[in-house]
Length: 350
Image (cartoon, rainbow, N blue to C red; front, side, top):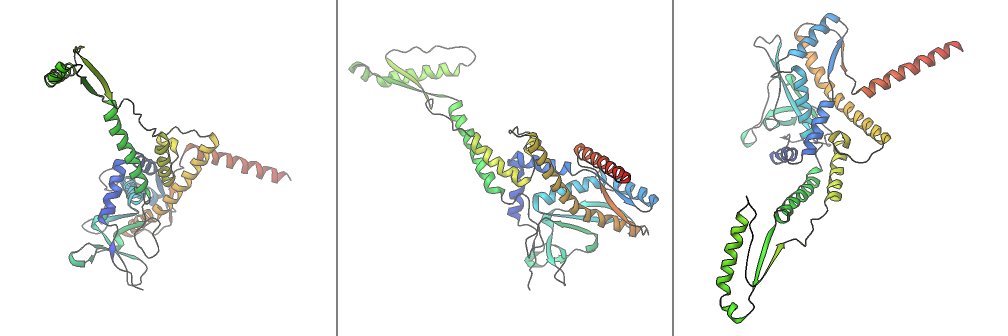
């Protein structure tokens, strides 16, 4: 089976998703909310001394400030936006410790299968197809979100939204044009000559009327009166037209976007009518989405921790411990522990 080398993402698609976040604020807000809600974490080890040293490293490792938590936030943001995220572990000059962990722009990476046609090999984009694999593949980190069969690159959560977003932007653009036309009113001044004598002078009178009308419109600091002689009518251009009601189509487009991003509308400031039970169900759905993303990040964090332990000569088991997503989870866990304790006490009495 032939599996060809290919870009992580075509340049046009890369720019499309980037511009999509810039032009549709609700998409950018939803992805930012997801990244922030993923929460923080720590690493628990069987050896407590190693655990303290390891968590200190994760907190202070070079990422431009913020430790590994900043790296993970940018990594997840890249994963959601483009479907694929790439990072690099940079060692010190002696190669005995980790110097920094960096996020890698996807434009600088191409993917191909290894000799076993299973794992991905990250390569430098070359000229005329001359692609060279990066050195030290074990120090490179890559995650793919829901990759299609036969593809190494993942699929962005924004996949399928360009059409809906394009319709939404057309509505917003039309609203802006209509308000420019109807909100900033324009006038039509019509002069009708009443006699033959007036008709002979109509050109001059029309010119005088136009000059006086323009003068009255330019004087914005004070109220100016317009005085004319003859049959002169003034109408507002477009006054009889109504701006189309955009509430229903805009909401339909936003519903499609929010359904794709799995973020409850109340978290984005959209006051759609929802019951308390519905809001709770939406929060549960979001929690399951965040747990899914955490499982993907667990692999990346585990790779970093494993390399650090090997470089320092430690051999101990560890696991990534995430903070609970919100206080509602804390309450539910406390209730569950209470109910389990009550059930155990009742069972002892029987």
